[in-house]
Length: 174
Image: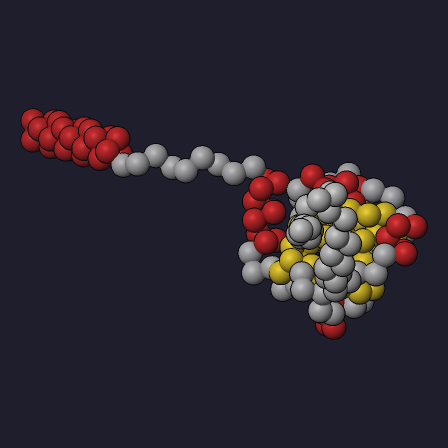
C-alpha cells in the first residue's frame, strides 16, 4: 500500500512539472495572427489565382445553393468577359460565377434576380467566384460592352495664340 501511494505521488509530481514546462514553453511562443473576418477570407480566396476582369451577364438565382433559411442566393451567369487589357476571355461565356462575400458581392447575391449587370473585379474561374469591386446594373449594364479596349489618348489641345509682342522679332528701323 505504501508503495502505491509513493507511485501516485511521484506520477503527480511528474505531471505537474511537465504541465508547468508546457505553460512556460507556450508563453515563449509568438501569438497567433489576428483572425480575418469571413468577408476578407472569402475575398482573399476569390482573389487567389484570379485575374482582373469586367464581366457582363445576368444576376440569376442559384438553384443549387440554399441558405439555412431555405432561401437561395444569386449568381452571375456570364454572357461576356474581358480581362484588364480588354482581351476577350472565351471560356467564360455561359459560366455561373458565385459572388465573394465582400460588400459589393453581398449586394448582388441578395439583390434583384434576372437583372442585367456589368461587374468589375477579380475572377477565379477555378473556384467559380468573382470578388466584385464595381457594379453597373440595369440599362447601363445592357448598353455597356464588357471592358472595352483602352481608349485612344485624347488629341493635344490646339495651341493658343501668344500674347502680343511675345515670340515676334522686332524689325530694325534706320
